[in-house]
Length: 90
Image (tube, rainbow, N blue to C red):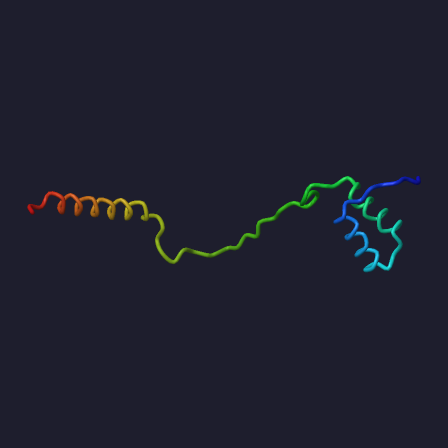
């Protein structure tokens, strides 16, 4: 099919550069660019499932079962200390 198109100046420069780099005629560069641009695209990552790598870190080096209790105790101590400072005579 033969047709006339009007190119924006930036597109014209891109086509000229592609013609030089590919050492190809205008017709081939335009057709190749249109084929790439008009081809139905697939979403990024389509067809490939993401796999999260998993590693066995072994036994923990500290007892993690009592962290909540330790956190509660520290929070209670901080609260008591704060109340002591606020109620101390000035």
